[in-house]
Image (cartoon, rainbow, N blue to C red):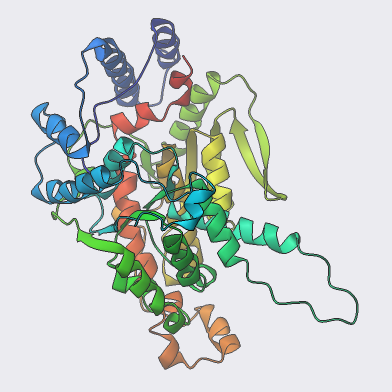
Amino acid sequence: MAARVPLSMKMSPSSWKGFRLLLTEQLPSRRLQKSWAEICRRGFSAAAGQAEQQESFCGPLDHYGGLIRAGSLREDEHQRAVLQQLDRLHRALRGYSNTHTSIFSRFFSSPKAPRGYYIYGDVGTGKTMVMDMFYSYVEMEKKKRVHFHGFMLDVHKRIHRLKQSLPKRKAGKMAKSYDPIAPVAEEISEEASLLCFDEFQVTDIADAMILKQLFENLFLNGVVVVATSNRPPEDLYKNGLQRVNFVPFIAVLQKYCQTLRLDSGIDYRKRNRPSAGKIYFLSSDPEAEATLDTMFDQLAFKQNDITRPRVLNVHNRKVRLSKACGTVADCTFEELCDRPLGASDYLEISRLFDTVFIRHIPLLTLNKKSQARRLITLVDALYEHKVRVVILADHPLEDIFVHDVDHSHDESHILMDDLGLKREEASSLSIFSGEEEKFAFQRTVSRLTEMQTEEYWLDGDRSLKQV
């Protein structure tokens, strides 16, 4: 993602005074204390400058130009080219709706839906920024902007609810076959004329098998889709199980969404920006654990709560976190990624906490693909909800995931045998090769880099938004 819109943060003098009080407590590192104090000072200065007159814009492209003129963003011809297309769609959507305004309108042909966009490119090039800029200017009540993980979780919940509502099968009689996909698509279509998806990716076979029918029905119901992804459409679910059944979805997507590439070759998340202080620590540092303990205590001091275990209720399942205080959770990698947790669990953690400590992240080899996949999903959820992270890892960020080729103790051999697959034919499948994790981890590294900046850290403090 490119450099963000100028910091929009409100900090009252009383909040500033309270936060400074916390920072007067001695930390193991004087440099860390000074860094955190500097964050607070700059945040207060940013709040003081809020009274500046805001320029009004007529659309996403105009807004982008204004940010360039103000020096908040640097000119990027690739971003501008994509925004030119999105600006046209913004104008085309004025007055558009996929719902019938009256009973008589059902008997007449509905207005044709404009073609959407599928925007792909390398990590950190500004795809999410341009889509969000477009979304904010669409004058439409029925619009939704969602992370693709969250959207598919919602789809599966709706499918489950519809199946549960069916009358119970009578003993000795075959149950009638029921396909809930079309009704679910109709429900979603009634709620949104425009769907904007961030991080469109397909790694789950359960998602892959229903996407064609789901999106075909959404498009037929007049829903316009704009999506961002790191992969071009033809590479979605690459080397996935039963991909032959997924491939027809690609044609549907390309029919209703024009493909745009946004690839300037620059990862804006990694450009030099003021740091939030040291929040990524190595286990080899003998003072690291004590530093994290002190940082947690400092943050917990602000909470109206006691440090205690927390039990989260996720779809009638209990997820226990051993240490939390208010909106701050102190977790281990084992707690978050060694257990069979998924996107729904991480979204709930993101909803409840604004700061998450992740301790003892090990080296992630191919033998730890499941854990690596969970860490990728966890960081996606935390980033999407502006949750701050403090990390203690065995290796530097860029070296956490190692794409080795040693399968001698790979537990996936058991799965290969269960599926009746030979080693040679299974080695190319992404579920075994680790290619999907290696590709997605580039995004994780990029996001974790941005999550260490001062701007991200300040923007993620939910207590300041309540002032």
